[in-house]
Image 1 (cartoon, one colour):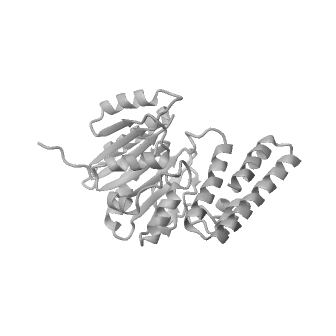
Image 2 (cartoon, one colour):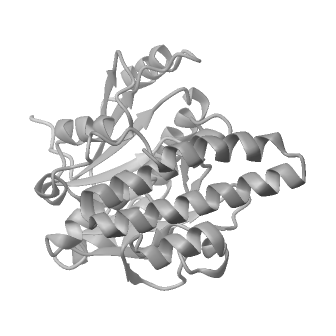
Image 3 (cartoon, one colour):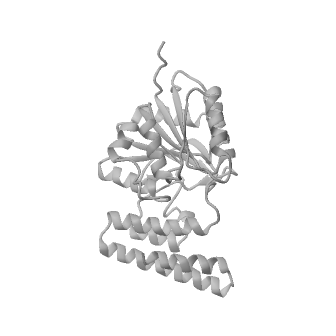
Amino acid sequence: MTPRKPELSIVIVSFNTRKITHQCLESIYKSFRSYKSKDTPRFEIILIDNASVKDDSAKYLAEYAKKHKNITFVANKTNTGFGPANNQGVKLANGKYVFLLNSDTIILKDALQKLFIFYKKHENIMHFIGPKLLNRDMTQQPSSAPFYTLPVVFGALFLRGDYWGLTRSSPKTLRKVGWVSGAAIMTKKEYFEKVGGFDETIFMYMEEVDLLYRARKMGMNTYFYPKSRIVHLGSASSSGKTFPILQVYRGFLFFYKKHYSKFALFLLRFLLRLKAISAWFLGSVINNNYLKQTYEEAFKVAGQ
């Protein structure tokens, strides 16, 4: 008999995260074994190692995949970046539905099934959907937000916008939002391909914002579904805090160059430079070399 085609394709990209990728995979299988029902989808996993160099991820994951018939494993020879690797995974997907899942996540109980069943019922209205993300200590992780208009950027840079819920937040109820975290996004393969997938010129950060902004411009909606809960460890494949900050700067600039007017881009540069100068000055006052060095570099990035 010919194997039945999977309904759901789970795309996971690993980069120097052998242990947590294993933990992620195990949590998926545990969830499907423990909470099986008539609505549980047939699934496959598209697992891509993005040229890990710090551990033996590729070798280990290849062996893991051999033990599971529903895993397609690919070992890239170069680190193509988050977006291109996910696009690669979606192209290989056989399912009607795709779930883009970071390797540094842990599926809690029946979170994946809940998300899938709910999404399947509303796929014509909710084109993209994300679950509630939790930190390692089970506290809420802000993982949905409005798009980065200038007031939102100002709130993010100067007003601790996440803390006050002005920028990223974690709603308690189902909500239509601008974008959800790229750590966990469910959609139909058809919708992902219609939007054109992730922009492959973005190496890291802002990919999901750009993707879902383009989707909104095409009349597609994004929703946040809090009844599905997934732990997101966060920044597992990044080292230090400087790199993410610089990438966020680059992400803002890329987003505004692509989607906003030249005047808006001018105002964005002003805000980014003002933030960099303020943080550098604070670093000088308290003798913090990290702040000084990071935001000296960030100031340079803001002018690019």
